[in-house]
Image (cartoon, rainbow, N blue to C red; front, side, top):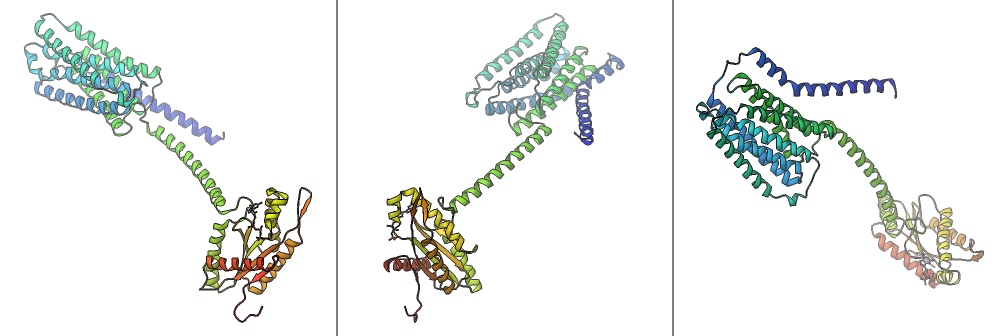
Length: 468
Ligand SMILES: Nc1nc2c(ncn2[C@@H]2O[C@H](COP(=O)(O)OP(=O)(O)OP(=O)(O)O)[C@@H](O)[C@H]2O)c(=O)[nH]1
C-alpha cells in the first residue's frame, strides 16, 4: 500500500466514524429538547387545544392506515414475515390510537377517556415492532400469505380499544401508575428492537431509518412519562413521536417503491458497490461472449479436418472477390480439384489414411499458391482454389504445377507410400455473366471432362475460336 492509499484509507475511516457519530447524535437529539422543556418550562404552563389535537391525531391515524396498506402489499409481494408484524403494528396503532383523537373533547369530563389510548397504542406498536424484528430473515412463499391473521389481529385491537374505553368509563381509580408502566414497557420494547438489530448486525438503509425511528419512539415514551396532559412536555412527546413516524413512513414507502422488502433495500454505498461488482461481472461475461463468438464464427467458417475455408465460407469469399474483380476490372480464376480414385485410398489404406492425404494436400497446395489465393474444401475430397488478379495463362501454369507437385509427393502412412493424382477443372470468371454458382458449375463440368479424359490432368475452358 502506498502513502496515498494509506492517507485515503485513514480519511475514509474518519469519515465513516463521523457518519456514525452524526446518526447517533441525530437519534439522540430529542433528549436535549426533553431536558430543556423539563428544566426551563414551568409545569403549569399548558397549551390546551382540543381541535388541534383532534386534527393532529386524525392525520397520524390516516398516515398509519396508509402505511398498514403499503406494508401489507410489500408483505404479500415478498413473503417477508417481518413485514406482517409491521402491518400489525401500524394497523393496531391505527385502531387503538384513533379514539385518542376523537374522544379528545370528552377529556374535559373524564381525562382517562382519551389519555389511556395513547400509551395503549404505543404498547401495541412497540410489541408488534419488536416481534417484527425478532422475525427478521424469516420468509414464506408469497403465495402462502393470507389475510386470516390480519382479521384476528384486527379483532384483538378492537377488543383492546373497547376494553380501554370500558376501563376509562367505569373506573374511579388513579390510573397514572398504569400510564407510567405502559410508557416504560413500550420504551423498553422500542429499545429492545434497536438492540436486537445491533446484536444481529441487521444493516442497511431501511433498517437504519427504522432504528432511528425506534429511538425517537422510545424517547417520546420517556417524554410522555414525565409529561402531564396539555403541558409542553406532552406536546413535545407528540412531536418526537410524529417525527419518528414520518421517518418510518419514508422508509416504508421507499421500500414499497423499490424492492418491496425490508431486507433487500440498499443504501447508496451498497448500491454503488453492487453496481461496480455487476459491471465487472458483465464486462467479464461480455469478453467471454466475444471470445466464444469469435470461435463460433471461426468454426462456422472452417473445415474441421483441414482447417481451411468450408464450402459456405469459400462461396462468401468468392462473392467478395467477384465484387472486387468487377470494381477493379481484374482477372479471376477458379480451379475445382478432385482426387483421382480416392475411394481406393480409403479402401486400401483405411479412412484415416484418406484423412491424412486430404490434410497433406492442403499443406502441399499452400506451398504452391500465393497468400492472397483462397483454398476451400467444398466437398468430401473436392477442393476449390480461387486465384485473384490472375489471368488464364498464369492460372493454367499454377494448376499444372499443383497437379505435378501432388503426383510427385506421395503421402506416407504407417510406413506405406500412397501415390496420388488429382484432376482439375479451371474456369475464368466472366464479368457480368457469372454468379458464383454458375462459375463453380462451369469449373465442375471441366473437372468431369478431365476425369473422362483419363484423370491426372487440367481441363481449361476454351473460348470460342480456340482450337483444342
Ligand atoms: N478419408 C476420407 N475420405 C473421404 C472424405 N470425404 C469423402 N471421402 C471419400 O472420397 C471418396 C470419393 O469417391 P468417389 O466420389 O467415388 O470418387 P473417386 O474414388 O475419387 O473417383 P473419381 O473422382 O472418379 O476419380 C469416397 O470413398 C468418400 O468416402 C473424408 O473426409 N475423408
